[in-house]
Length: 292
Image (tube, rainbow, N blue to C red; front, side, top):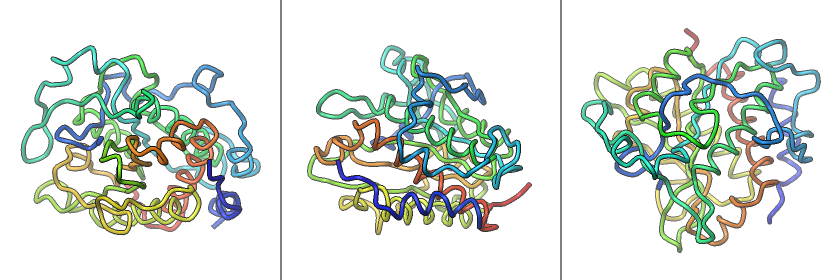
């Protein structure tokens, strides 16, 4: 595993002071909407890897109680769900996706060793939640475990909208060609009547995530799609229906052996999630977030 560079931990401390996306978005689970699960050994949120602990703001309190991110709300959307494969009728149903309709959700990708994207997405998201709560943010998850179905792409967007989120991040790992390496961040393009108000702040959020991941996550930017680690899309319901700044983080390519080695590593997931949380914190504290 390529460890995070020293800059990762320094950035995590300083910030508080100043295939997935295929035809059906590939990104959403059914109810349990807006539930923020508690930390436990089972969900892996208390593992205490050095990268996560060192990156947390001293004295930060979770659930928006004190800390540099107090007063901010972040929605984290772990893509797909563990029960999707057993519910083809439900996840195949058409739902609103902006100007048109798309499938409710998809199953997601998996590595050659059988590590499923939906499990990666949840674990990474839980670590992001823990870090952001340590910094004082209120964090809402679109799903709390890996056993259910959905929510659908329109429901995922609605959770962020109803929470009045200052930022929303949908967490994924792509399922591209085996030869393709790297991560990318998807930002919404302009869709008339839907995304005009969020295009600019979402782009800034995407750039913060791209820059932080490129510098400190030990993964290169994608060499098989997007440009310089960014991809703009107008076909994803999870973005089209959002009224708050929102991006998709495709944290790596599960079908690439080098990427998969990192994605399957619990310590890398925890430390990379701290990097992602630091990028969200930088976005929020920069004044780029659109406050309601």
